[in-house]
Length: 260
DNA sequence: ATGCCGGGTACGACCCGA
Image: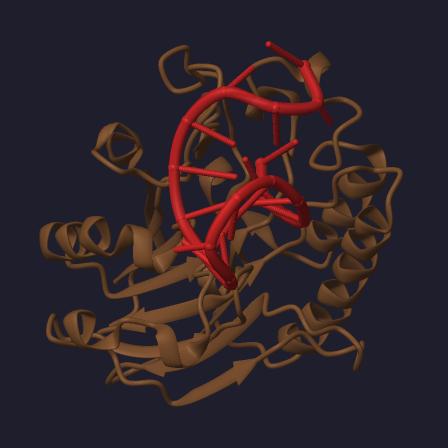
């Protein structure tokens, strides 16, 4: 079972790339971030014609998340609990089942948080506290749980091209790292790091020839509870997509699981 | 290099991303 996270940076601008990639790879579940579209504006028909069920949690212009799935949705949840005044669409979760098992996939677009002197950074840290409380509740269910998405977190020095350039950035600040460590300490593992110690990037900026110079960072993650980690076969970062025409600045990261 | 690119909104700049 191939389960993918991909920040597409605009569904309308990326539709042809997505359709081509879905036809090529036929992933089972694809979690999209930054659809930048309201639910009614999401181009459903062409994706549905490839066999995908679609659930979206959108907003006008910014943010927005969606899940495409060949399996039907048993349940869908939209939005991160804990702040009734938060109107940003950054979380959507689906529950799926096969003939012999059931599992939960939670798709997040975690706030960027820059600049750190602004209330955007406080929003990020508060959002991460809410995510950690939400995750604690999910772990009580003791079912395979995959928390994936664009975390806007660089986990370690090896996950960026020049760590000293990133020290003060909201993606790498000690305060952000602490919240991410608290999430890990609930019992979630970083799927990629169970398979390789090599530098592996998921994002290259559009500017400054970042792709050409391989100035990337790793900020898109699959975090697994023990029940999901036990069923993980492999992790693949689809780096080649960054070289396609009209690419997103993020590439898909895929986990292959033994749900059967 | 806190704006070099690229996408959004909405039709001319301006907001946003990481």
